[in-house]
Length: 479
Ligand code: BG6
Image 1 (cartoon, rainbow, N blue to C red):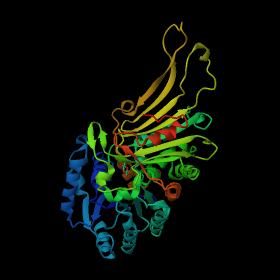
Image 2: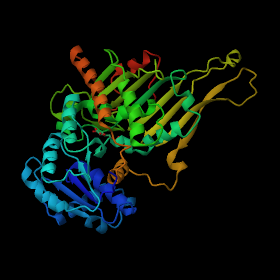
Image 3: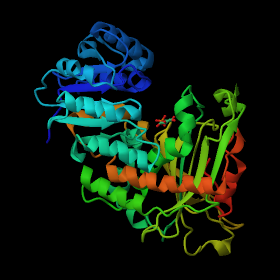
Image 4: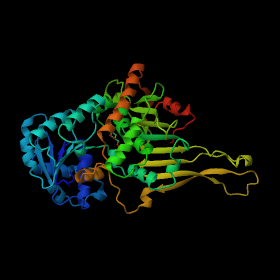
């Protein structure tokens, strides 16, 4: 049922995500006139707070996390907020919560940003208070389980109260502008798609490098590790967008149908195709940083870095490796996708001494949003001593190409889509399960081999074995 929600209920309303992302995003949408005037936002969490105390709490979060240029008058936004204290694990408080939510004119959107262990009890509570009706949609923040089995349990619990058409699973990478731009690049231009296959592409690299370490998320991160925290969701979504067939339409069913086919075509990874690492003390940008074991206060077998050589076993991608790597405490923050094309079939310049490099397309997702295509060009001159060719970049910096357009954070887009009911940029159950299936098999392989993370110095690009993983195929990571 299509409706624009006029009530938004935030579980985990005092948590880190609410403070850093959700409240600032909602404020920014409001400031730009994108929220319906009658939209009320009800926060709920365990802490005892009145409406006005929550408004003060929200104001403090906005002052802390909103970039100065996007801060404006807050009073109107804060007036939209209300708060209800709730122990989500017991049924008692849900009737009071329902009273606080009131009767929406059009519909209610619920955002669960709590520990997944609370999802089940919360759904039961919402059901008991009549908050799962046809005009209610449910949005779930990661982590959605720790493996296929636990993710199925969560999905089953949610499916007991909501049909898939009203379930919105967040992967905030899908809210990033350049990630969506990948679809425009592929499907709004004629020139790439005919080359986008094994005949013309040698390999693909996807890097998500972070400079941050544990960031105080001790309990969560040490149980997750890089593969479950980053690969299972964000990186596989990026891979799916790169590798999928053209959907017939830009809509939730068509796009997700194509992504899930790719995820199901991922080949099981075998021993030797993954490398894991864990950082030790080092320096990033001239600043000394402690090792993971020091931050954690004990030894741990959790990987803070992972590199994987993946394959998509279908007609289009047969034989094209997808090298994935992600890690904490790497030298710089960068998310990028590299499409490495093959060499031209024959060099007419070889007799004139010229060497050539194959074309390469680099899609920068963050911190810089840009697309660079390297092309071969002749070095100017009279060529008496032979022809010299050099690779030159054709560079599109998105902020320059679209000056004046507001650069929005991912959650602004996703929250607006949630309120308005567009599922295209949300992850469907079959995708999540295909992602887990592939990741679980890798982790089972690690257990069987007794693989433990190799150490790497903070500020380096991970263990040297990760370099070797690509280099033994003659591939160099793009840096
Ligand atoms: C989250 C992970 O999903 O994504 C974090 O849990 C990670 O560990 C974050 O730091 C990265 O997001 P972004 O948008 O900063 O690249």
